[in-house]
Picture (tube, rainbow, N blue to C red):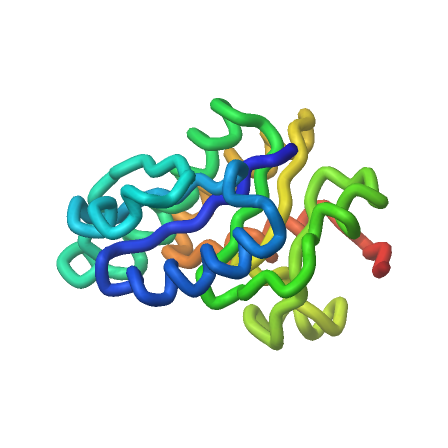
Length: 177
């Protein structure tokens, strides 16, 4: 089964605990990998059966724009290490096991729907791909996707812009399920 990854620092410890409660209710704790953005958060979760990689990144000091680049680099590292993974922001509370749904579809890239940002994607397709919850399956396309998004996020400074720019570049239509 795919790794479930999320990023957190000590300020998010209470939210991570709530998120993990729901993940645990679904029997998926063994799949979780947390990227700890500071050294303090790890001590809050020593009793949890989850994998934690500590890779400090101070968003306040380095800025959110640099964070998106950092996060895209981590996506590539996780992909190279584990292959298929799901990324979930901590505010995406799991009420049902998404693997039951996602396993029905053999797509390389599966994204939750965003709102209207970036506008060019929304104007063309009536939706945007959201980086708050997505699944990437191991494939040649996924490797290209991750590397192109990283290259672009270095310039755009926004992962959601870069993801949607990739989709605009390569896709003329989408299959909605």
